[in-house]
Image (tube, helix red, strand yellow):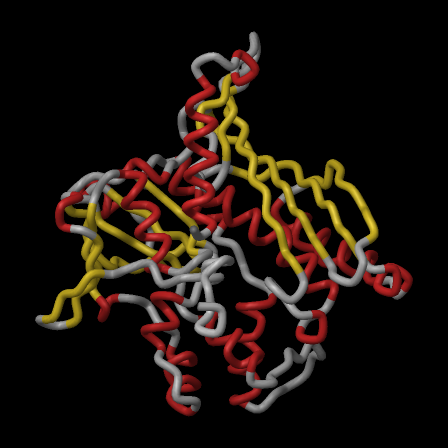
Length: 352
């Protein structure tokens, strides 16, 4: 059982109780969307819905202490939650951060520097830190980020809104973060000092920062939600193959995407070519790009702007009937696109 199977089991238990559990609805609020999307949705009075998401970063699972900085970790802790709220078409409002640190890390000033990174990104997107918790751990760093967003009632974009004939788009480039991770695993380290860098070093640094300091597509998320252009949406955190399958499963549809249309940064292609890496595999299965994957009805495609905040979107495929499955085409060849992204509890060959 992987984490997605476990989540579905918990989701089923919650669903079985909802009919009798009055705690889910009060005089002033009601839970509109629980487990199964990028954020939960709570309807409140005043014509607004609140969206709540939470994310964990665990040392030696999500990051390694010697490959990043406290400032970059603080940035990433908020960025991954901002991406969830953006994927719902909403605006982020209030954040909560809980951290667990070993005593030696606490005494090093790590916490202050982590919050420096958090606050820098929070100020950029108008997020106010509203609370959190601090605890001691034995030897590993743990960061828990919670974020509350807001949108007009009924305007949140869910994963389940796709229909056959809808067009599939993604923002930005895919595979950058995975390429950055591979470079980190091979010994590359980010350089934060200013000043001119050789072209190769500049390109490597950019990919490292796509892994260590992702930029959530907040502007695109807000536009797609407020203008009601996206039928369904999800952020690409686990990898295109996995997240497209998540969206299709929730919507009860199939899909076909064109491998040639998947946007891959030329820098990734060049660097992968020198290091025997496959750019398409990184784009399909790498994850942590925190781009947005969304569907648009054919009549609304012409309403999409070319860029938002300097970031373009790319058409990559079409939603089909569920019986077609989720597939990818490369020339005349078409094959099933199975989820191949990150799973926390996937067994390695050594464990099998």
